[in-house]
Length: 235
Image 1 (spheres, rainbow, N blue to C red):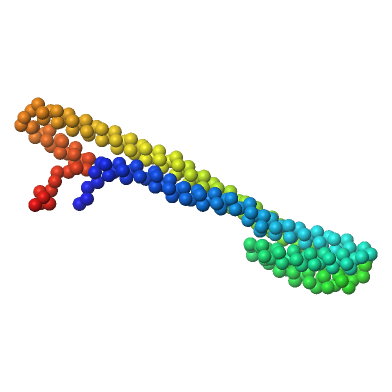
Image 2: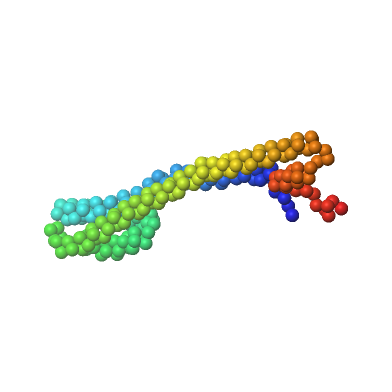
C-alpha cells in the first residue's frame, strides 16, 4: 500500500492554491473578454433594434402628419421605404420570440395600410383606426426592445457577481485555507520532530536503548509517513 509521507502531503496542500488560481485565472480572463465585448454587442443588436423600432414610430407620426400636407404622397412614400427598411433591420437583430412576433404583426398590418395610404385623399380619416393599431404594435415593439436591453444588462450584472465570487474564493479563500492547513501540519510536524529529537537524546544516554523510546520513535516516524519496512517485501 502506498504511503503518503509528510513531505508529499505538504506538497499536495501547497499545490492546491496555484492550481485553483490557474483555473480561476482562465475563467477571469475569459470573463474579461466577454465583458469587453458586451458594449459592442449591445450597440450592434439591442440598441440598434431599439433605434429601428423608434424609427418606425417616428415614421408613422410623419406619415400621419403628411396626410394633411400638399406633398403628402411623396412624404408618405419616403417614410414607407424607411419603415420597411427598419422592419428588415429589426428582424435581423431580434433575439426573443416576443420581438419576432411583434415584427411579423407589424409587417402584416403595415403592408395593406401603406397601400391604402397611397390612394387615400388628403383629410380622409377612414384609416385612422388602422394607423392607431399599427402605432400600438410599434410601441409594444419599442417596449420589447427596451426589455431585451435591460435583460442583457441584468444578465451581465449577474455574471459579474458570479465572477466576483469566483475571484474572492480563488484569490483569497482557497489560499488562506491552504495556508491554515499548512500551518497546522507544520506545527504538528515540528512537535513530532522535537519529540523524536528528545527520544534520540534519551537513547544516547541509555544504552542499550529502552523499548519505550524505540517504540515512540517508530510510532512518530510512522505517523509522518515513514513506517517500519515490511520484512516480507525486503525478501
